[in-house]
Image 1 (tube, rainbow, N blue to C red):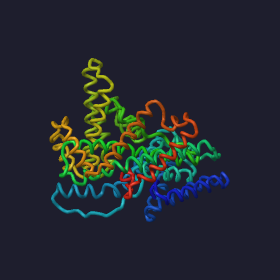
Image 2 (image 1 turned 135 degrees about the horizontal axis):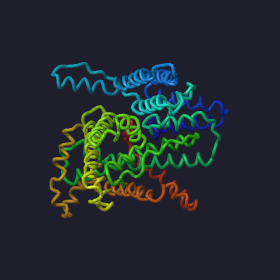
Image 3 (image 1 turned 180 degrees about the horizontal axis):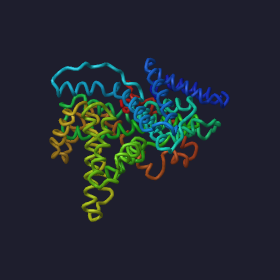
Image 4 (image 1 turned 135 degrees about the vertical axis):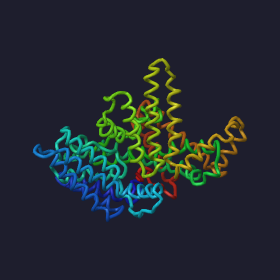
Length: 473
């Protein structure tokens, strides 16, 4: 059940009414039952997986809170079981296929469907276990609260990956209806829906046309498609986060922000402080720092960075293009650290130049993320600058755009206009959040813009609605 579907609107309307109408003692039960129904709506058979995961980690967490037991063994075994489930459903076929190719013999392939959210809730649970082990939080004693922590439906599909210290106390609370929170949540949901259905899905039409028929495109057409994809994935994923945060806020729960103007980053390291913040901070706290972080000398710092981002690539997808994507980020961040160590502040480029450099690098690396295979990605790199010397020739530009948009002038105007809106949202956010900006407008202007957003969602929705990109991970 996708957050943008009519089924979800009916589902959440019912949950919202019941949640606020029933006595406060039933709020936890309402959210937990709603979360299990949401999970089962995708594949009912997989309810057993999330039940098993919840029980294993509930008792694992409780055991980690007892002084008399060997905590290292308990932590290792519990995390091993969590990762084993993730491996079977997400990585088993990938490793079987790779071993078969390298070894020259056939291994059986298993047709498992990926349970929704397993990559996200596995990391969230592991973070909880490590925090309990470190003594930074107490183990959760209420099984219902812990179960909801594992499968809270707004964030279940694609995060944010919440910390137990932040989310568990909110789940324990008895919430009081607050009109301002409900209004703010509904507006945040509308903004996310607009990003997803009006902007991202329409950019996807052009992007999919190019990536599904790569041999037909070269030069400027490929460059533009890469730019479009960089904004498609940003609007798609940040749109999901806004929708998830908006839904949670309407039932009194605040989820963390996951993006902070990533395309205004002035280095690769800065980009990862701003993109998918809940994941990048998880990598820092639960992999990078335990590996030694920057405490073991400069060389080991670089090695740790590369390891962390190779793991990041593998987490995103069971394919070599994702591993290469993550590893390249690790290498680039290492190069930045080496340059800073050698040159220090001797070379200080203008911030605008650094922002343009970072955006170009990030956009180029998205090719590995979007291309079906590594060979497709290298096709793009081989052909991306074909004929680019003609960039000053208006006829070349017109011909490239016409081919890119399948000679549909209306589509070209629409998509370019939506790209401008996406960029404008980020430019506005440099000063204040778009919803805060609207608060400063008079009520007529404010609600006229909300109505326009809703109208554009309805009119511009893609007949072939795309699933959220990050639900695949």
